[in-house]
Image: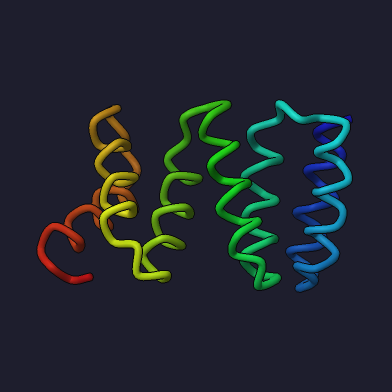
Length: 117
């Protein structure tokens, strides 16, 4: 079931309808509250639907369930866009400390450390 729900969220995002993706994802999370990939996809939908508080909540929940470089990158990017630079730096640093091989996390960490905030 969770795979189908994730597919529906991703299909709505691919169709350019983040509001629909958010609604589908929020509904699916009621049935699958421990599905980290679904939480992460809902974070993307929420951010694209201009729901930054929901996006942050989704990515934090996804990361609490399962460490993931992409969710870390999305959360740090959101925090950075909101001017919450110390929190963004902490996200990127945590990914680096846990051995992330994801280039986006390393680039974000480097940019913040170099003062490219």
